Amino acid sequence: MKAVILAGGEGTRLRPLTLSVPKPVVPVVDRPFLRHQLDLLARASISEIVFSVAYQPERIQAVFGDGTALGRRIHYAVEETPLGTGGAVKNAERHLDETTVVFNGDVLTDVDLPAVVRAHRESGAKATLVLTPVPNPAAYGLVETDASGRVKSFIEKPSDPSQITTDTVNAGIYVLDTSTLALMPPGQNHSIERAFFPALLRRGDLVRAWVHRGYWIDIGTPEKYLQVHRDILQARFPVHLEGEPRNGGWAHSTARIDAGAELEGRFYVGPGCRIDAGAHVGPDAVLTAGVTVATGAWVRDSVVWEGSTLAESCRVDGSLLGARVHVGRHACLAPGAVLGEATVISDHSRTR
Ligand code: GDD
Ligand code: MG
Image (cartoon, rainbow, N blue to C red; front, side, top):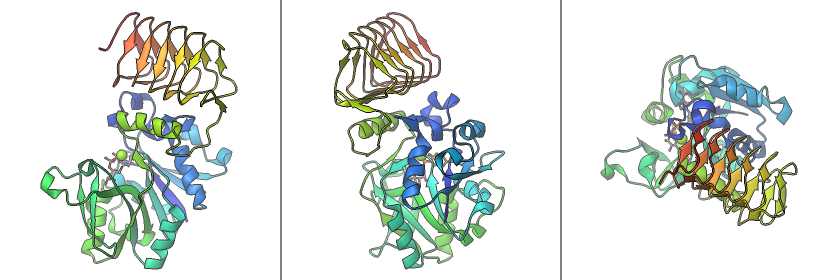
């Protein structure tokens, strides 16, 4: 069995971070996002994967190549123009065998994938969808089921509150009989949620739901992207981080942390970072790689990408900083700041 990962969206809600790094490879703590999905797929013994790509495909290929370095076989189905979530699966069809796992390339979850695949096979369904309860279902695809778990209808991102009839939403993970892809027009834009699944139901095919009540998040907004880092640091989603435990957080062996630095709560200090005496890191700070935090600077509840520098006595709180950002001395970034690659914040600037 093989998997298709839908990794072609433009990640507009994560701009400006995704202007230079496509969402599937944004760093999530110590690794590019899709590595977390490959780990989950490995638990279901899936090591051959098709990345369905459209936006900046070469940047995704540069990270994963053909997968050999990770012990996987990775194929790329590249779209000239984005074909939508359904068209993207159709475009990968030639690589697939009779059963296919489809993953939205921006969800992180501990769903028991082998159990979902088993249930799919035992039920004889043509498609099995993972659903998950969320507090704000309107932002997702609502999926209505009957008491037996048979899917009755799809309501993708309802605009009318009266349509919110359930809090279990499409988690963006499906097991499909690959033969069902015959329903999709080749080479055309097609939505798996709005067109393909409703077409399966109209045809009378059995579509079943698997409700997952464990960890699940779509990392596609700044709030959720920051949240996933808190969740990993606080072990709500278990990841074996590449680093050593240090003062309650983790630090890579090549990070240089001065003995006079103040470390608080959970944090991750990645390879090549430098934390000076009197700098304050944490709680919930992730410095992915090569980040410098100078004396008196304070970074908490934030994600800071490779090569950024936080100068003396600046404050970075609740913020997302792309690669090679410079935050000047005494500058202050308040919660909600999202800075694109190479942004320069001058000394004493503040966002609030
Ligand atoms: N290859 C390819 N081509 N991939 C695409 C395309 C495309 O044209 N459009 C979107 N994708 C990928 C995105 O990169 C992402 O990984 C996934 O498909 C879903 O797209 P999003 O744009 O993130 O959709 P969403 O989050 O608003 O909604 C979807 O996911 C929700 C769960 O997170 C829907 O599937 C909802 O029903 C679902 O609840
Ligand atoms: Mg999404």
